[in-house]
Each structure stands twice: as C-alpha cells, then as structure tokens.
Length: 414
Image (cartoon, rainbow, N blue to C red):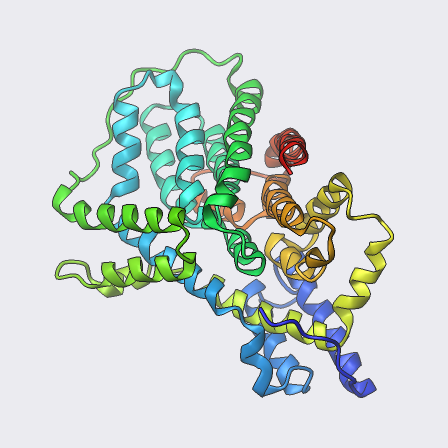
C-alpha cells in the first residue's frame, strides 16, 4: 500500500479532520453513535464522505488509500464459504463427527470444529453457520446452550489467528506486511492449536466440572447432503488452499476460486450474494478513507509519536498496547492505526505477527471485542441471552492465557 505523509491543511479542515476521526472512532468503540442509529459501517461511510467533502482526502487520491487486495480477498472468501454453507458442508461435517463421538465430548467438538473452520475460512461466517446448529443440538440433548455458544465465539477467535484468511484483521496484515500464507501459518498455527486447548480447558473448568453426564445423542433431522453438489466446492477449496500454501497471492487465488464457483448450473447467484457480509465490506472501504484522511492531517503521526516512548519495540509492551487498543476501538480499526508504526520496528516481521496475534486473541476479552462475538450473541437471541459478565468471566482467563502463549511462542521463534 502506498505510504502517505501529512499535507498542509487550513485550520478549518484540520479541525474537521480531528472531529471526523474522533467521532468515527467513538462509534467504532461504542458500536453506535450516542442518540442516533448509526452503526460501525454507517459511521465508516459517513466519515469517509466527510473526509472527501472537507478536502482532507482529495478525490483523486481516494482510491490510493483503499487496499483493494484486502477487499478482494475478503469478498472472495465470503463467496467461497457461502457456497460451502449453501451445500451444507459445515453442518454435514459437524453432524458426521457427533455421530461418532461420546455425547460428553460435545464441548471439545464445538471448540475444535469452530477453531478448525475459522483457521482457514473467515471466522465471522463460521460463527453464523455454527450458532443455529449448536442451538439445535443443545435443544435436542436438553443441555444449557450457553457454554457451547461461548465455545463457538472463543474457539473461532482463537482458531482464526492461524492464517491470513482466518479473520479480517489478518487479511489486512497479510496485505500490508507481504508475509506469505505458509509463513504466517507456520508461525501462528501453533499458537492457534495451543490456544484451542487452553480455551477448552477453561470452558471445562467453568462449566463442566460438576455437570452430570450428557444423555445419548440423537442425530438431528438435517437435510441429506447431496454429495454431487459438494464435489465442485470441495475441489475448488482444495485448489485454493494449495495455491495459498505454494505462495500464490491470497487475493488472486481466492478470487479465482470464487469465480470458478460462480460458474454453475445449479447454484442461484442471488442466494450466494446473500451470504456476503456487505456491511463489513462497506466498513472496510470507509475505514481506509478515514485513516487515510487522518494520515493527511497528521493525526496518525501524532498518535504514533505519543506511544513511541513506551518502548513498543519490546514484544510484551507491544502485545499489551495492541490488546488494549483492540478492545477500545475493535481489532480492525486498531490494526489500521498501528499499521503505520510496524514498518519502523527493528524486527517488522515479528511485529506484524504480534499485531495479528494480539489483535485477534484480545477479541475474546469482551462481547464487543470482536465481530464474531457479537454475531454469536445476536444470532442466539431470543433463545439465549448471554450478558456482559457471562462472557467476561470466560474472556478474562482465555484472553490472558492465550496472549501469554502467543507472546512466549513468538519470542521463542522470532
């Protein structure tokens, strides 16, 4: 992505830039603008338009601030995962596993399935798929659904740290850093695996220690999977994953896979487009322009100057700063702010990996820490209500333990 320096702006424009930036990040932190029905995507678009309207971002340079490889990768992965969802791939796999396991193994199955799927597919979409399935299973087995829903949220966050395609902030980091897919996986894959075990251990300690054995599992009345419909998506996904691992640029490889899946005589494109989170794409476009305007106005450089005396070159300090900022403004906006700082580190490769690790794992601290958490909580309503403290009592130990694991591992292998 092209680097931009601050440009001289009249005082009125400079005040406007600060106002737009602060208002936008307030919405990113709170989830909505106080007193108005403006959500994060809405705030991103309003902020982007305001940055252009006040000539903080010139129309001619607006496209230069947008990282199209990130957008293409995110959109393409949504289409690929959406296609798998439509043919019942995820439901079939989980049900297949459950048919062959002891009912008391439901919790680890949910944790590991959520983590495994999220390691290679966008975790937000995995959560959308897993929540109704978990609700149906727990209802059939007469189990309290809360531990299993929390397993979906935390497991998907931890698993998604493994790869560039695991979550939106990793896609950003993959694009900005130039780190290859295989390199990313080799460094952060072990963190994801170890983190999943820690997540399972904490969930078991909090919810399962004194629980009686689960009743026998009755298979759900799921639609029979048409294996002929699954053949093409499965082949495409395998080819895409091989392309990632051998070094093909992720955006290009994912786009080729998505294009191949759109060539179909059976899949209705309209249904596939409904699987795309258009709000998230809009959020990214707006955020690129807001941060671009902040760069032009010198806001980003001033913010970075404030934190340089904290010795962020130390991995432990940088991890704490990233984790805190990710919980204040959410992980994607945090990565957008910190991306300008990382290239100046003595070891930028390690710093990019720490940024990916900390911003992702910090998302488990609170409900609003990541979009995946919000998806799980909102998708479970009105059947299940999970409050702030219900989540926080799990989020604290999971976040601290996984961050310590990630920091220790990256300090060891850097």
